[in-house]
Each structure stands twice: as C-alpha cells, then as structure tokens.
Amino acid sequence: MQVKVSEFVGESRRSWQDAVENAVSEASRDINNISGVEVVNWTANCADNKIVEYKANIRIAYLG
Image (cartoon, rainbow, N blue to C red; front, top):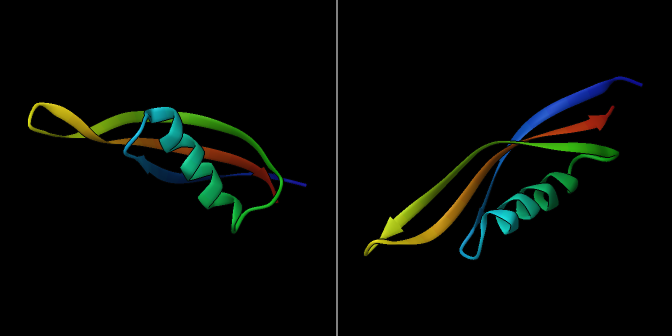
C-alpha cells in the first residue's frame, strides 16, 4: 500500500483543536485508513475584537 496525503480546512466556533477534529471527521467520510495529521496553518476570523471562528489547514496521511 502507498501512503497518500490530502489537504483539508476545518472550522469551529469553539477552538483550533475542534477545527482540526472537524476536518478529520469530514475527511473520514471519504477516506479510510487515516494514519496521521499534520497541522499546516492556524487562522481565525474576528469580529468586535474577538475570535468568532477558528480555522485549521491540515494534511491527512492515509493508506490507499
């Protein structure tokens, strides 16, 4: 088997960790055998000087 990598963006109103977990959950709908996750970038949207949405760009490694 070959290791493949796909990129995803996760979003959450709660935290960056939740954003990563949401991205992995979304990826698992189409991808089986996930073997690892690399967080590439953390970003957030702000309003009224507060974070209103957390975002995480991730790479998911899986056996395919």
